[in-house]
Image (cartoon, rainbow, N blue to C red; front, side, top):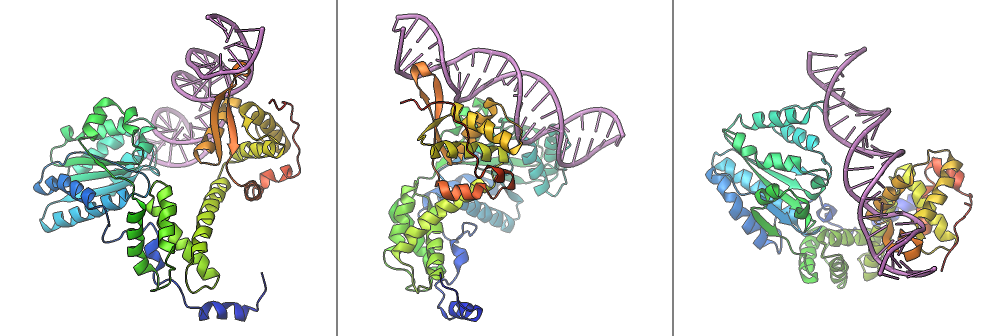
Length: 411
DNA sequence: TGTCCACAGGAATGGGAGGGAG
DNA sequence: CTCCCTCCCATTCCTGTGGACA
């Protein structure tokens, strides 16, 4: 890196032709006007929901599809159209969107729903059934069709499906309003854990969003690139490459758009006038590293300690480590930094969480005579992760700490 | 062939934080 | 203030288990 005078620094950046015309189009918060390759899904969704415009209750719908297959975009798009059409027909038709990843308990869900209808419910403090009653009362004030979109509904199930059961039976208690639900899930088999009664009521209709293939992703990217980039800003191979990378990730269009955007940002930073193949490769790498760093940074301290234990063991020649070994080292780290030592039971849970976040890879293996354990392999780059860990002042004392490894390597 | 290791992971419980209502 | 909610983390106690080895 060469230093420049401040003057020159900005001058150079300004003189350079920008590659982007409108970068916002490439972010996922942007909902496009037309959704390519999703006509079938839009039509089936609309044909089910149309009964709302006749004043009937539409069937409940379950929508499946992996991340970045356009589920949310399509659902919201159709929802907006429905509300608009209802308005012009003089019908009260309200579409409510909730993301269960953020709102992940029965209470919060009901409170949030009620608030969307203009009634205030405190963050906490009420018994849940009171909130439910309040919700029913609120919507029943008016003759209307209410459509509740529950995005990432699978997150809700893990905490018990009482809400869904209650919501699916709500119509029997209502005089004026009618409620129907759309559940959106990226877990194809989440209904297995569902109460059979809820399952049959919620899944009256099902719509599946298949992953995009590389060609379809290319089409999507072409469409957006026209708005996002200046003409001729992209090398010929850029879009196909983004599409190919994203197709490997189960056809994730969101990922493809990220790649296209980040590749452009990298090119811009290098003062290039257009985006080249190598920028896409750089983008692929950067996205992954950024994700990991962000996740590790926001980990609770105890999890950081557990993760650092795995890293220390790896540095000492262990390729894959077991829970017992990790716990051993973890205890020493806790003493060193004066933190409470959690039980092994808790630490196994922490490891499972790290596994789910993709920071480690944990597989249960049986070693016969030598018991049954989890083999944990680090799946993040060790140096950059370490740097992030030591940003936490509580881990500072560990920087040069060497744990005593009591267990032997067998095999 | 049965044993038995070294844990996995479910269930119940506790306790504290955050926040009502009265 | 007290009494009650919910939510989350953590502990305790527990039952379950794949397969190398005796």
